[in-house]
Image (tube, rainbow, N blue to C red; front, side, top):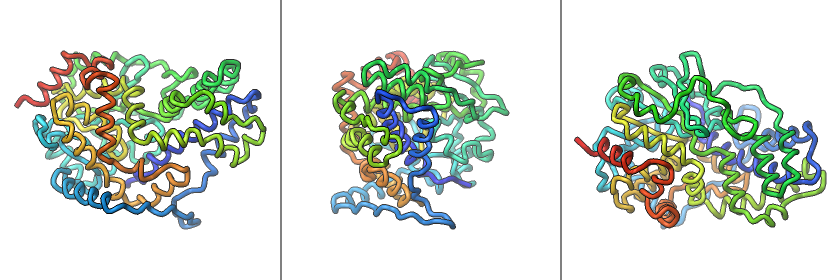
Length: 448
């Protein structure tokens, strides 16, 4: 019943590279015609060698990087802690009560961090929704990942849930009707014209124009990279005000806090203009030449691999601010407890939300770091781990970096929050989760 868990994550990062390299091409003096641009898009998306094995074909898979003795010791220790703290679920990975970290003040049974829930077995479902009584699910994945999830509408899991979609541009929420699906096909718009209009501006403007207008990233975004008009929506702030009348129903909230467009824009903002300009290939062969495309990707690969997970977390905090605030509001609403939030493996986006909640409630940094590091072997436990390593390596991405959860990543992230925002509370002020909201969060999660 379940779809491959790794494909979403690998596709997310490969889509980032496709978007970034094509964005650089958009800065050439002469833009490719519409058919040529679509040919490039299709070629970079569909003609990449696959890392999956089927009855018809077998493609070589990159070797799994060997662990150092220190790394193996770390994995052994985290595996032991996972046995002690993880929920006894067979098909939902990386699931823990946020009361489980050392010195966490959270009352058990209020809020959980988990991996993708749609793969749950019958026994898992009985534990999650029967014994634990989870009432609110928060899906943090991007629309690209949702489209790739064949179990997104699995009736046994989500049949009793009302779906809610958060639109971050104007902070609105839409409640989907019984016949509405989260991922519905929309008519593709002609965005090339606006991309061409952007070429007359400077290098970064042209790149942003092409990324925003041609790729548009997500299903919820319109011609200007902004979300479509939200019909029959209401303000997100009203969720708390009206929560009492919703207390007897189950809800699944879709809150995309990071997508490919945000990742590319964040990476672009870190690159020097001359590095971007230096990657521009003026030859027409850039559209069809694999060598030219690889040269175009290099600045992005260097920045992404060099920045690793700390940079991803930095971009999450910056570009995911509206969604993070929305999730904190949900968790601070006792009428929606118990709450469980998740992404693909429950590691990065889920780990960031968990870290903010734990830090706000006074959990020591080392306990937050330890809880994050327990996600280190979640990908190693997945059936298609080799395929995922191959998919990332094939795109020159460091699999060891992006599939791990080393302690220094969360230490660096907490340090960066304090350096940039003064404190975790300062970051919350920045995103609009004010002192009153934080007091409410603390109360509902710690009072017996």
